[in-house]
Image (cartoon, rainbow, N blue to C red; front, side):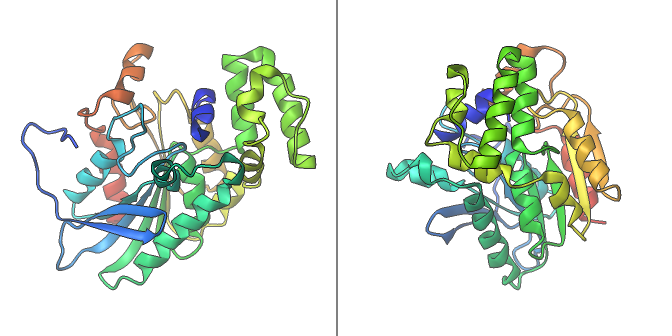
Length: 308
């Protein structure tokens, strides 16, 4: 959830040498939510993981209009190989954009929670599955925490923030644009107290413009540490040490709030689950490498947690 990613928020090609076949179903859960169900064992699937995407107009594969890395698709396909069914879906903004009906002023964070709960309720009624887990990535981590309280059997956070979104953005600004930090903090405080902010710098207009403020305000109402603490189910917290969008310190905050959770920092994993080293250019390039697989340690960590 970089500063630049927050700005962009509102506005099938296989990774393997030989194509692989996956048993799948295309499903529409609501008029705005379409997704793909992968069934490794159609006669007896048992366990399902619902994958909730990060911020922005992110589709079921983890891609956006100017970014194709297939991170969520590869995650789902690799779990399939370990006999774990998955459902991944397009964020509602994807369909709204296709219809040309995106209105920033009407978007609320609660909409994404409503969508995720609809997905969870759908599969709780599906007799093929005896257990339903939720995997939330980035922004999807917080959405998943709230959703999992409605009856999931386990929750997995990947690159989830441990702070409220205003604190995350202020911390990012401190590194990327320190001259804007104080004004951003004051503007967020105004937004939190009054529901509107007026006295923000021009350099912050992408965040505080009138049409976007209601969405940011609704997002600020959710405190990740409080939400994860409410969960009375198995929890796994994962972050990569090469994630340049969500720092390991965010995962540490979640672990502190939920000390009985399993906790894993994966070496050389970046924000989109790809293996990188210390080169910033290499890290950035992975966001548009459609055939680069996800790091195997992520899959092993999730499989071990679900199959316990």
